[in-house]
Image (cartoon, rainbow, N blue to C red; front, side, top):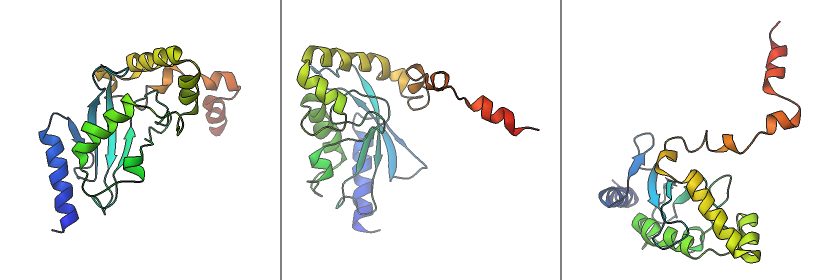
Length: 183
């Protein structure tokens, strides 16, 4: 077994043996979801997110890919894809870091200290800079709406359904198209 794969196993096992719930995808150690709780004394306290982790073949020499599965309102997290903009993961990753660092230091720091000058969510960054009180309220609203334990099982499919009613508004529907397909 090569050194990177031993390190991958060790890091994933360390994460599993800590206080985090880890759910592997396809029974491998390259892709998995981790249950992540918002940091205490932050706007995100009480929120629970499913974080998707993908480890590249070159891990730990190459950084993991980290993304929120259920929605979060944050300037440095893309609202649609859940991608995270975090220098330590994207640019300055080092093999000295491990997965516990990601969940115990990097993600909590990201939520505690958002950086609106380097946004992935322009609306959140703009609102944070213009009206902090309204921004704080929207963060709490998203936590209540999308970041509860019960949202973790059906995070992707049903989360968007209560916000988007675009089919009725656009004037076209899948039923019309499907209806013409049958003779």
